[in-house]
Length: 283
Ligand code: FPP
Image 1: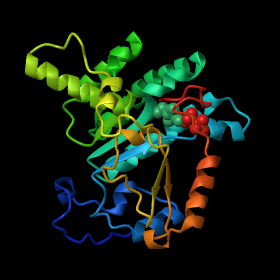
Image 2: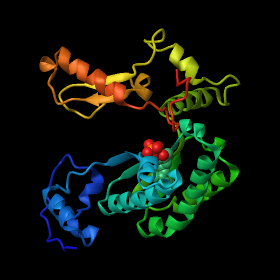
Image 3: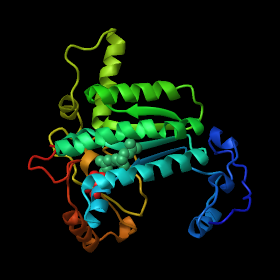
């Protein structure tokens, strides 16, 4: 472990308001040599305001060690703790962790039950960490579909941390991007009409009114020039698309490059949130 010397932080008008609160590498405490070198290169005055993480690969981690999948989830909580603590120390405004998607109900019942239990345990165990770091905990997703006990615990944890003023930690739980859009539309209708609709909009209704309504969703999204962004392109439709990002610039993207992308696509295992791809994948 190394101790960091103070790093100069350059003033920058584009920096988020929270970053007027100056962050120095010392706030992370002792660091490894590798972290030390990375931090030396990092501009702590220009950090992202909101970090979103898809915490993927728990099952594979466990498989490699000949452990049950759930061991991967349990170990995954340690990484979540690290991400939360580090982000809070760096004064990031919001951190969103994708813990359970609306598609994850397709997993075996035992794994779902384990994840729900793990989450309840996690909330209880990490409450001191959240309070110590002044973190506001929120849950994103269809909470009313969660088991009663989980609903109760998440509600309580949200209330207990509601008056904290530091980082917002969102845990996406029973979350789906499309479900969120549909829920937002129905919330608009409710606000307009003063009561929830007797016939709420569904994902299928919305899909039927998109420009691409008569087409299947893209299953491969290619982006040339190396930018790792979705850029507001077919946001609904690419919900399950495989993303292939190549450094090749578009003018150089010839037939061979396209074939490479198609080959890469064929190597991917498409699972739609489940463990193995079901026969009837989402649309
Ligand atoms: C994806 O890995 C991970 C999940 C579906 C669950 C994520 C949960 C945790 C990290 C633990 C709980 C964390 C919090 C913040 C409460 P996977 O099972 O899809 O892994 P695989 O792709 O290798 O099969």
